[in-house]
Length: 411
Image (cartoon, rainbow, N blue to C red; front, side):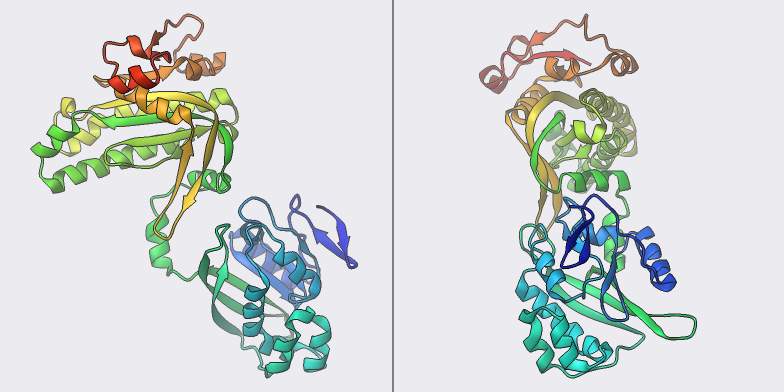
């Protein structure tokens, strides 16, 4: 949807960014909010929506696309209400819109020449009773609203704080209003949650907010002889070791362009998507690169925990999934990326056979490497000799049962 008309209004489609308003104050405000990555809407003096930031449209579009909207429509007019109710993820069903309008209506009435009667003709008829029941209130220079909206595809309500800011020109005349929103959680908590995060990794996580079939390299790593080690160390020391190991491993995955998967005890899972890496070859290279970086990082982790290197050994399994179902799982307690498919289970079988700190990769993965990527890894896919998993001396019972024919090699 791009450059189409709705009731005489231009619809800004998901393929285009929102044009800046004509008014210089509104334009400067819109540009600054968008550049800062804010979630914000800007309306003019008559409460017509003249700008929505990319982050807001991404949120309203279900984190799948930039939500379309009718440029210049009244913020609560029929065109905007109808389109908002159809945005992906169901962020704005009518009952949510009604609750939102009830908060803004006193200010909108006060700003509308002609008061209630004039506003009644501007808003969606399904909101008309709210206009009739509210008293006009002059909007102060700045105000804060707390609102529970629906901003997830799962339909879960989210507490939102919105700063409503009056915008004035050089003469002091009101030219519009900016509404800047954020989760109700305080910035100190948000900072703690994201301080160790990597912006590139967050962006990759957003790419898989909507689950779907994706080609990806899969990496499993696990700490060998973890049970004896956990008995040797105090619980606090063992926890510190695992935390250091997880941080080092995750950094290796992030640096190699991957997605950190689920942590289960001392196990590590990561995915390297073809779509975010740029190609299947790049994804395979990233997977092997991350495994090698983890192996190099383990000695430092051991030293920091006053352990000899032979006490902290990781084994690695790598495999290719041509059609994994990859997506983001978000709950009230956490957000993580996971994948389902036979190749995920097969990767676990490969990893369990890689005793002695080896890194085993499947033929399906290695043969995804294009010549340049293979050379960078000092691998030669055309001359490598593979061994069926079931024929390895270290093959586990599960490997012989579930994936004996998968060909692997050390990388």
